[in-house]
Image (cartoon, rainbow, N blue to C red):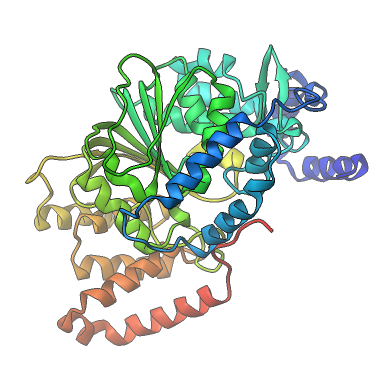
Length: 466
């Protein structure tokens, strides 16, 4: 992008900015230490460091793909089938660890890393927002650093550390869990990308996991392994190659366990203090969501944290591959749920929901009467996406057809554009096949379903970068 075009965008932005807000934003930009002139120029080193890590990661990838398939084989979403194909085509052409890291940060949609020139103006605001919400973590926010091996155009030098837009994003996610989960000795991440969240979890100055497990496709684990071993050479990394194999004892040193999805059974002996998923469950198919929800109920784990898209317009689903997720089984209770956390709106125009859930013992689930009372208490409120988030939790716990139907009609009447979760409610009412309900409302339900199908057909979904 040319400097002339950037200046034009700046002028237009200032003209659109509310008059009362403009002075504050200009003051932040003028005084921020995150100045664009500090952007790193050129690569970290002139010559890559060699290919030993690549070779070992290739060996693990090959062995994982040759291992018997323990988890029932299901195709990924069209989006992820395309991205996995891209990985398989390009991995063998990567010439160095830096090539692999930069490829993962540029061509695989693992995160929304941006060039510094597009986002540096917001870095100070990001840090202030995080410190305001999590004041006890302020010292960490002021000294945390991104990987020096990341794409040079996305790194800005400040006080001896490297800053990027996604560094603040990952810090927000980790803080959301650390602020409420009492113990994080063993953390499991479903879908770890290229390892950026894991690196920050393992180096944060609040509480560090002793064991960090990443479950992902073998192709994605290739990039996680290279990234983590490049950034943390002394880190103990164990790659699961056998569903019946023995896991390492991590009591002596901090350990990362990389587990291909189809070898998931190897993790059965572990107890997870916390399971995390951010930004990827919305991209899975409905069958995969059902699979992961069942696994969370079976696996020995206590807490689950999610930061995922929610309330996406049905006519513009973008990366979405399902209509509602996560949708935990009733053996989980939601301890915290928030629609569109303020920090997330600084990073994207997409809608998010933050969830923190705790697994409950058998027999502690709410009764049908308690579920109906909970919905009745919410009936006086205006229907917006925060209320929708809370109502979907009521649906998750086992709401009857009358509750689901009332919620659906309120969504259609009060929320525009229609959120994709409304489509899920239509499908749920169809699946229940309640003869009495369909006799009373079947015609209206069919009309809503046809309207939704038309909206969805005109939009986009399962998108990925070209």
